[in-house]
Image (spheres, rainbow over the protein chains, first blue to last red):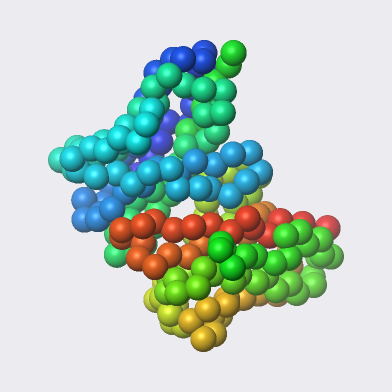
Length: 108
Length: 114
């Protein structure tokens, strides 16, 4: 089993749609969690941290379920500019493990 | 500088030659990571530095790969006797504290072995 698993997609959604990604991780001792976004032929960039209480940043909501060992990212009112690959990242003692990413395409 | 700087941004080399890739992390960031990413693939962990020491070298794919970090700052990744399968984007990232902040990536070095 991979340490961090994501549905690779692709997710193709119309503008304005709500889309959700899930990510599961195998190491129950993992301590912190992040979502990164990667545009084509660019480096990954931090989108948001994920906290147990859940956190929101504008149209983006991240949630963590430690008992079930999964992380989610919800994007509301999706924009064309949200098209990218979304990477789930799990950190255990500075060992940062990346999922393979979920590809999102938002269409007009 | 304001971000993680990597050089060169692109490198084309002949099979069998050695290459050296450089990463200049954000000032004050103690943790430094190297990853590589082949076209259309996910990130492959290579090595992690905390200060000058490398507590985790488990990701280096072969003994042709080595990395060092001096002065707790600049790091170099060296690939000896390059092979075509080494072609990838090599990404460096740094962080003051990955548990709290995650890390910031450089724009990478695109290595092509011909």
